[in-house]
Length: 128
Image (cartoon, rainbow, N blue to C red):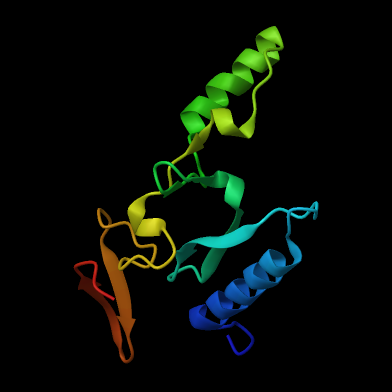
């Protein structure tokens, strides 16, 4: 695990990358604006999303996929040729998954286990 970055390093990289993309994006640029939208500390994952997936009116990211709707649309396309777009199956990002949330990407309905050095596993009640 020597070459695996810490989550904070991945977050810092993602923030810098999003900032570079924002700086290069202008009204005349074909580059879309991007921001860090989601983070999951346990998986060391960060999602940099196009701002078009942010609902300004509701102040919500829509970076998740409604898989039931996706498969319904896909099957309809397969049978009838009815087209669909990513907006048709995009879902709101849960508040706990949004970048900067107190939960750091941990679903509060799940039980979190944290490894304690020298001891197997300790069950935690969704604490960091």
